[in-house]
Length: 360
Image (cartoon, rainbow, N blue to C red):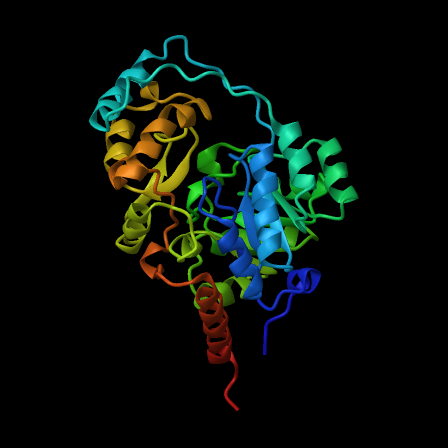
């Protein structure tokens, strides 16, 4: 019998599983639609898309499925303060540019404030859910999202952040455990204070807020889903598990790296984007981190600085220069179609729950 929670009933899902927003191209329309068709909730990670790309991607999802899906953006960020002298950061990555046949790097331009345009496109996407990370949305954005009937989900790494999100109008909170791959969502604490494991974080959050809590971080199979539900979560959000699906849009070298990684092979780094994120340790991460923060620009300037490098590495199959975002459950990754993954997760969850049932 399918497991039902407040969130599965809200979206008409067969399984309490959410495919995490995979900003950067991992969540193709094919992946999002396949997840939805399999009875879970797919998400478009739209933070790095243009308004036109949001419209195109969401239209492609709607053409493939009539199931609900979500869309995700970064909360507006204060403008980064560039260093007085960016040369150490440029000189640190210049040899890698040369190795990949690129022209020498130049200081990245400060990013334009495009949140209003991205939000307007997201509101027109047809998505049933809207999620965000890195902070709290402005009240006007919350009001606009709710006026469209979209379910609003914010991301937190501490109980205090979860309470702040609930007060700001979030309909659910994603509890990002320290095991999670990708960028840390911490916004109301020091990053090291937000490194709380999912087993400790979820029950404390569920005790502190009235809205549903979604567990995220290191969950790769049905045992993890069953454990999260037992801790009080209304659903799980999984990213790394979906990155190795056939429909995922990441480079093949990235998929191979995930499938060959172990639980002790990831760590936090600022080397690729300027913001702490968990990924598989590779040459770029190791060598840039060794020089310390002086050689790393603030987010998102460092992200812009390394983008040409990562794009060239993807084309050349050079995993040592890719931001291989992944959680600590990487050893459990499998290569398969998304529909098969969701079905396997549902079966494993039911089996895990059955093992815990009292003997008759």
